[in-house]
Image 1 (spheres, protein in one colour):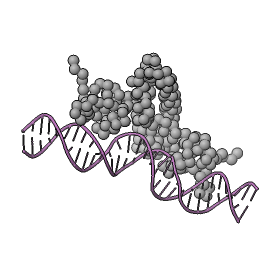
Image 2: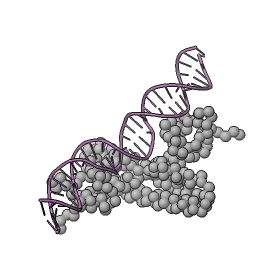
Image 3: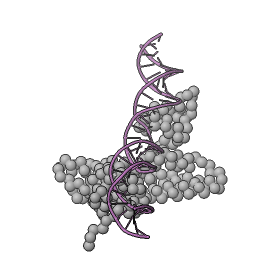
Image 4: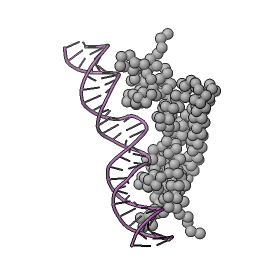
Length: 118
Length: 118
DNA sequence: GGTTACGCTGACGTCAACGTCAAGGACGGT
DNA sequence: ACCGTCCTTGACGTTGACGTCAGCGTAACC
């Protein structure tokens, strides 16, 4: 069975983003579609990447940070220094996520209080 | 005992933001310091507000959204329409927070996987 | 063979969230 | 009297994340 592929328009519709956004993400190296002539051809890999990007975006990360994060998924951690760096980045992200979770908890508690006042 | 107060510099140092940021937040109505002459004088209320703003910021909300949220804490929900609107806003925020929590869970699971690969 | 639909690349515009001067007023210390 | 420190208000600059428009190519359809 041949590998499935999508046009830029397909992808934009599927994830509710604009064509410009997808092109922008490619310019930043977040997506690396195949080219047939000048036309972009997207594969499953690109869909997964886009999902990662959008999730990062919802979590408030900059596209720059997201780039570093998604590249962690692909990188073969060749050298030992690279590996160390990678694990360090993971630790940093975990800390951010943990603080976010705490912020969410606090905010929800606050919302509870506001709601109770009604 | 007199109410405690702080200068703009105190507040900036305490929350690790710039003076410009604090002035910007005042311009947007997020902070409403007292004035002694032209000089801003901050009180406990402003500290609490600033904490809310920074939490909202860490969660990726725009200052505009944050303004609406923090004002929910103060508003006396006068009319019934206002109240309805307020509760609706709370519901919307809760949904966003819930999705963020899911995103965080997913991202942490992904980080686990990346880490395990090492 | 003209129109419509889709694709591409520049390149300039926009908006939020500040950064960064410039120019000045109000203090305390020496 | 003058310095250093803190405060103020404009006002223009910057960065990120796209929006938007111009100008063009191509493939399908009628």
